[in-house]
Amino acid sequence: MQPPREVLAAFGAVGPAVKLDGGRGAAWRAGDLVLKPIDVLPAELAWLQRHAPAGSDDLRLSLPARSRTGELVVGGWTAFPVLQGEHVAGRWAQIAGVAHCFAQSFDGAERPPFLDERTHAWARADRLAWGEDSVEVPDDVPHLPALLAARRGVDEPSTIVHGDLTGNVLFADGLPPAVIDLTLYWRPVRYSVAIVAVDAVCFEGAPLSLLETIDPGEGFAQHLVRALVFRIATDWFNGLLTDTDEVYAATVERVLDLASQGR
Image (cartoon, rainbow, N blue to C red; front, top):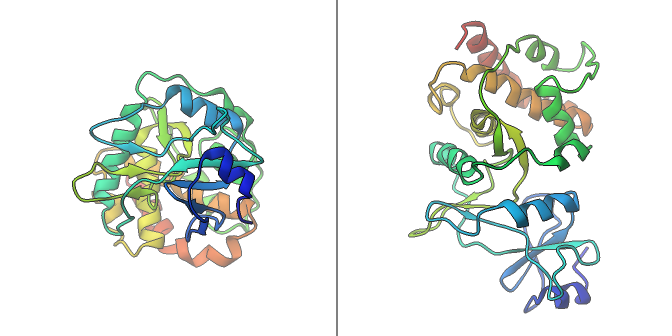
């Protein structure tokens, strides 16, 4: 569905709308704006407007744009500035650094109330990964029972993290990395890094060794366990697990081995 003319006019978008590849296939570019149907709670957009840093020498953030009348949502559509750069597969160590920088940029922020209001599959899977939802997982769901049994306590502080950085960091010569599609969670920052590692190995051809090298610190395996629960449970909740079972198999085997070693 293309953004209506009145939506383009409300946000001051210039030029024809061109559909963008990637994501959920619902984003359009018009001039220097990206428009897409709202896929988060309005409270999330408002929170970002109030709490996200306006600018940084280390990071560029894609923050929601206001319409000409000051609204963040017009006719069910949102708008974000176009940020220069492109995703480059293979820069996983740099993206891990972005995860830490992103969390630091929200230093001092309190846990956002909207996190408790989200009911989509990603939020449910995140809560399952951290033992905050009592979901009965059948024994025949691939991988999940073993991963859930492998969880141990994590004694690290939570902060604002981005839960989907792997394909949402853009690199451009002479500019700091740009972060788009801000999906916020209140978790330890190493969990965000673990999601990057799992995504890289399962979907971008990274070697299994990345699971150990991207963060060689003690206790990282527990974040990898939770990252896999997050991804696999999201597929399960969305009814996609039968299509992706084998995608995770080798990674699950290695992460369970690392967890059993107390890594």
